[in-house]
Image 1 (cartoon, rainbow, N blue to C red):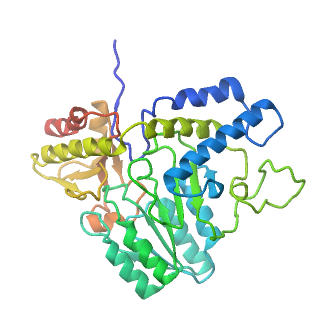
Image 2 (spheres, helix red, strand yellow):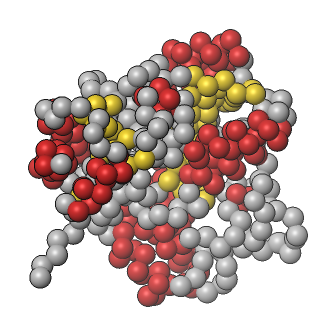
Length: 378
């Protein structure tokens, strides 16, 4: 019996398959290297250190940041927590948005309780899009110390126009933290934010269990995760310098090397063209889904401020039922709330969530359209 691999339409959660070369780069660590950077004096350790530095430089160039101020973490969640807890002080005010992932929303809620942080949440519209001008207006009236927001919604694909927000932050002497988990690797994220957090395993097409936090020169944050860094100094104090101060613990070296291969692959391919093809497939799927009575498609339908992500609901089927039907058909979609607790109030989907379809660069339009076929038969 021949089995076919599933069609992965959950790119917004994690990319699959990974970019060519990623698995080989990771396997090389397991098969040949087996050591971490700065954890010894062997030739292998020096080789790994050079390789990690090279990956750090490639990533920093993509972010528009200095490699010296780019730390590897376990993922965007750790990066955001490290920044918020290292930067915010009791009583600070923060402007954020209703599209935020739990990686930002939950730490902010916790800090409101623990440290008296005040937050203003800018609402999104019924398509799940945030108007940048509303963020600017809220910032001017609130005068926050920090504006913290996602570059794009992982539920609707709506991209936030970050440039005017950064400009307003400069005027107000506020800082901007950008969660670029959905966008880095897909679109330009070098937009002037003071700090950028993200993950390797989404549009960067790298491995899971790896993220980054990059912070501009002159912005100091206090380390809140302390431990071994491979420093040669016999000290029980955390090293104060970047990036070691924020890389406590044994690094995920195989994933870093895998990310390096993914960055090389991305540099050789046209991400804008891949995004256009995926958006065309999503638009075809939206049109096909709407032929079925009771289907509601969410998210922006036109313009450039969107990623190839489509959420939808059906009047007669729970999102979980649609997800199960798609799974039986060999289609990996995502049903539920997508770790974004606030946006569903605006979408009117707080009861059961949505079905989300998010193709990556290795999926064809015909494969995306199979989701509509599943619903037609249901």
